Image 1 (tube, protein in one colour):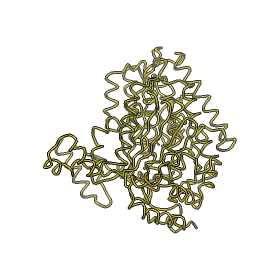
Image 2 (cartoon, rainbow, N blue to C red; image 1 turned 60 degrees about the vertical axis):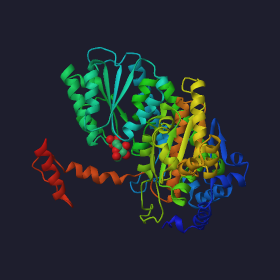
Image 3 (cartoon, rainbow, N blue to C red; image 1 turned 30 degrees about the vertical axis):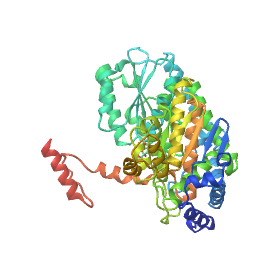
Image 4 (cartoon, rainbow, N blue to C red; image 1 turned 45 degrees about the vertical axis):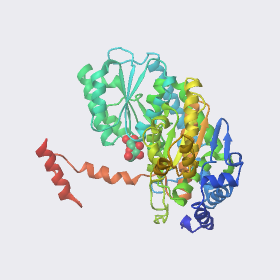
Length: 540
Ligand code: F6P
């Protein structure tokens, strides 16, 4: 019988601290502790996590670590790495870490992972050096990944973020949306004879992926003949029977396991499209980077543990300070897809309202995650974040060098990034705004008229993550940092971060609705849905 974590004395202590903190401004916190940066940043390997512009003090962080202890975080981390079935609703282990760290999972699990790695690496090498060819004998140069959710966002992010690491003349493409437009665009431009389709689907039943895979198959058959799909398709799935039915040959299928959640699967063969374009050496560095963070997460005291601190600050902002959203703001265009990736990671994992034991929680869980590369965001939604009525927590992420190793352009990015974290935290008071306008020669009437518009409240909390450069290794580190941060939050909230029943109902109902078919919808609200179907049939 688990207790609701809000009944823990450590939780109540934090609620009291939060009540005081709601009255405090980051300006006051800086005045009270001139060495805030020194006290509230952590360095690990080449990473810096700066929490000095979060609305926390050293006391808050200590209290959050105490809550993590009371919530049993240390034991949960060990249980996850050991392979205990901590995904209790599905009775499954949670072992994505075993895909990159030899110290996670059993020897049997490690053996399977190793065998899969060997199979993947052999295939990747054969495609890249042209031994593996299409049905007409042409080398396979266009890689089309068909998948959705974790079977799309992970390989897409890795391929995009490491574009400067592409080699071997292969180009990746990603198809996820059921509306077929992505695939149609590709079918218009790609040569089927040099196209390899990677169907990624843990279940191999997902409607969107199945529909796109069948359409891609028809395209290959139409262009190259009925026997061609064998040379142009591979798949990644746990569902052998469905892969048989699709006609996938042995040797053209790669394993997945029920102990890897879709949103945690990029480390498995789900990363194949990315590995094909960056090569296995780089992909190995990606895995290695994540493994370094696994070791850090497992072995470092909470007070110095980056993902633990990231997760605890997430809980503080969402639950104790009541900030409903988290904006993810990379100062690196290569990470443009990171917010989308983290949306699934955080919201599908921690978008839950009952504890592991099924008791409704009486506190807020996962925030809404959103974001864009910081540079562009400055010129779109930052206005609202600075002066609008909604407040958000902010994650700034920036490499010290551009992906080419350059510093000149990245200096501009960093200058902007640092200016923004400062402006969000400290704002500008009315007095300061008035002084500035007077110094610029504005009349007293204009100063009075414009002062309210030129005041910035500040007190918008942000974290800043700095790292050397976006490489395969640092990308692996970054994603593992967020994965473990999500786990920390889920543990403190006492929820199961590893199921996703919330998406099931929509899937089930979609399967029962046919546009223009004889089958009529049933269940609550069926008349309204029937009316919509009739409208579609009549008006198109
Ligand atoms: O939307 C739910 C979900 O199960 C995700 O968790 C997963 O990443 C996605 O669908 C795709 O599932 P599959 O890999 O089984 O096609």
